[in-house]
Amino acid sequence: MRILVVGSGGREHSLCWAISASPLCDKLFCAPGNPGIAALAECLPVGAEDIPGIVAAAKAQKIDFVVVGPEAPLVAGIVDRLAEAGIPAFGPMAVAAQLEGSKGFMKDFCARAGIPTAEYRRFTDADLARAYIREKGAPIVVKADGLAAGKGVVVAATLEEALAAIDDAMVAGRFGKAGAEVVVEEFLDGEEASFFALCDGEHALSFGAAQDHKRVGDGDTGPNTGGMGAYSPTKLVDAAMEKRIMETIVLPTVAGMAKEGAPFKGVLFAGLMIGKAGPKLIEFNVRFGDPECQTLMLRLKSDLLPALIASQQGELKRFDLRWRDDTAICVVMAAEGYPNTPKKGTEIRNLDAAGKLDGVTVFHAGTKADGAKIVADGGRVLGVCAIGKTAKDAQAKAYKAVDAIDWPGGFCRRDIGWRVL
Ligand code: AMP
Ligand code: GLY
Image (tube, protein in one colour):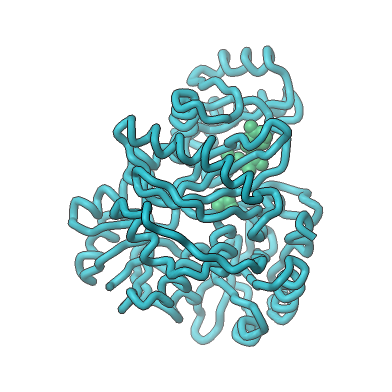
């Protein structure tokens, strides 16, 4: 088969890494890809959000199956447009991608389907939002309704912070249209986990759990980021918890979306808060997590590609996936200045040698080729991953590889995996 992966980050590099190993894959393409992906796939110069461009490229290259990495094209209807062109794709159609594309939609859906999540109200009027915040008190959470590149959520410890978040989103228009409506919700206490399930519109198959580290600094300090590292599995989600998450969150979602005429296909990523009252849903994403995906790909023993195809074809019921018992860790190396203003263009050396170390795989995220050199070209630049018998072993291997990479312009957290160690 001729396969096209859409996206250019570490998540997509790890998806290409897994798909390129499939006996079903004859030729792999990626749009737009990155220099790491270029070693596994033919990269096409089309942006992930250029939907007409992706459809045209998929037709021109006679692609049999498309795998969409990021959320923005899913929410914008890339799977619908590909289907119209007769090209099957892994991921939800636009109506189902609203689970991530609109926090208000997701919260109303959870209320209808009886899915445990934080108590909430939706607002299009700033004064009403402020009055509700004053009534409820802090801590409280303010979220822009639409996609805001991970920056639309404020977990406010004080009333002032919450009110400032309303001004930011609804008065100053910081997130444009995405912030014209906000969700104000109850603060949930507990420990966070990322849970994944492949869905085919009717059935769901657990794809395991991971934990990521959102804050930029060691000890979970500093501003939020897209994720500075991840590990899988996590003790927080044992077999009993996995069953509970499937029964109380994933299966009712798949059934509810089907009933409402928006069957969910693709990977459902439940961001969970696991506290005393059990797992509660913080948010849904309609794609793999980054960097969680990198750790899942290292642990997956089964061929990924047939599972993705079964999700699209509605054939997951018969599927079973096999996993390595080992722990996988991903340490993100970011460019100095991330998450605010990452410095671009600094040279990264010794990547090949680091990638050959025992148990190590280095995924590219924000890199660029500059002649024979690899240079930083984004915030999160590399995902240095390792798999080991224990979390400690995986962590030691990953940091050995980090230390082998010669990149004075980059930094990473030194404590990825601390919760499991
Ligand atoms: P989101 O973009 O929805 O993933 O939110 C970003 C982060 O904000 C989450 O990973 C949580 O750490 C935090 N968060 C979001 N909603 C809540 C909530 N209701 N209670 C506590 N923390 C939250
Ligand atoms: N690492 C969290 C996410 O991909 O949204």
